Image 1 (cartoon, rainbow, N blue to C red):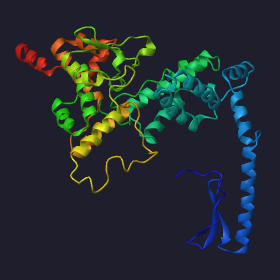
Image 2: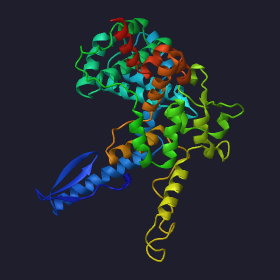
Image 3: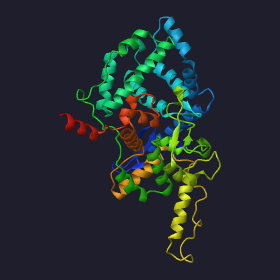
Image 4: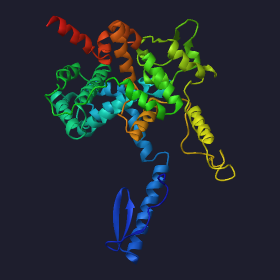
Length: 417
């Protein structure tokens, strides 16, 4: 149920004490014996206070408006002027202006990206402990203590902490560029080394590895047809899950024997890097039925998948049409859950893992298909081929995706030593 902010606080009974209570501003207030004149008088006083605060919030010059005006007055320019006049800005003020910057900078197609929200997560931890402190006083010791808090209170893994701490340093680096704080602050923070494996209390997480084809094949009969074709296509091409989800007919060059898929969005586009995915005969055969649609429509549609499911359910119906509900008769006019135009990476992953849990199959994710493709390509064609297919700029990155060929190592050991 939605929260009703305009409903007055309710007079009610606290059964264990037979007292009248009311919840107001997040607190439970005892009014006296339930039903007594004194309790009703106190209740009326609280109602008057509630009404007064409500009117105050609704006024254009109310408390919320004043707070918003104060927040809007805090800008990089005002913090810079503050520093020039010998005054010290707080970390709370820095977080306020930096958060505005991240929500403007980390955008794609008009929407805030996940990076801005991940930054939000770590600066929220920083604000909670050091928000009132001056920017210039935050150093490596404070950052180290904050890192320990991430381990104890949040149970973040070592790998995740090592990714989040540089985001805090990045905020101070941005502040240096805006002349809000001294460069020595960033230089000092950079002296704190990352957490080393086996030398910290932070928990370790297993890296993403490839998934066995046998496990994938055991899963496919139980997922929707559209999801199964997405899985097969990703396994053959080594594409990222997001690139499969947003595939459109207009993005594919079909002029040659090998089709070329040029995603409109991809992970490294903000680095001015191009991305091209080659599709051979097997991938083309899977994709061909999904190309008979408008060029701007998504190939893999949740709406189409649901329509197929309902059609199949109708074909398998055993109840006579004269009994029970007919197809379409029990539809809700405005359902709470509506299908989007294309799958998201999360919905694609959930569709697979939901089946794995139900069928008691080893859990795996679509991103592991990329590892599987890279491993197979490297084994057959070499590291450079895996690098090109995966779209990596560095072979070191490909090493993470392509598992080392142990058969080769065993053969060398047998012949050499």
